[in-house]
Image (cartoon, rainbow, N blue to C red):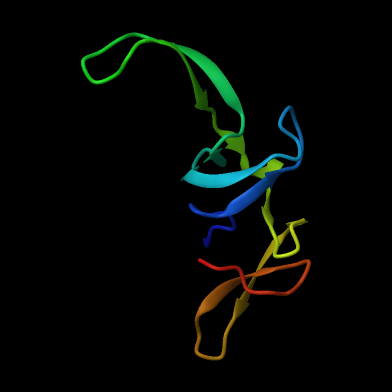
Amino acid sequence: MAAKIRKGDKVIVLSGRDKGRTGEVFEVRPTEGRALVRGVNLVKRHQKQTQAQEGGIISKESPIHLSKVAIVGKDGKPTRVGFKIQADGTKVRVAKRSGAEIDG
C-alpha cells in the first residue's frame, strides 16, 4: 500500500496540544501508524551521560498519530491525500483540496 504521508512532507497538526503547528516529517512508522515531526509533540527526557552524548534533561520529538496530521497544500491549508494513475502508468499523490500533484 502506498503511504499518504512520507518522510520529507510538510505537515500541520490537526488536534491535540500542538494543534496548528507545522513541521517536516523525518521518520514514519507505518506499522504503528505514527510519524515523527520536527519541532512537534516535544517531550522532556532525562538523558544519562555517555561518551557520545552529554547528559541532562533534553527535549525530543515523540511520535504523533498519522490521523492527527495532514499535508500542507500549496495554499498553506491542510489537505487530504488521494492517488491518481498517470497515462504512463505511474501512481502519484494528489491534494484533494486543490487537485495538484504532491512533490515526492
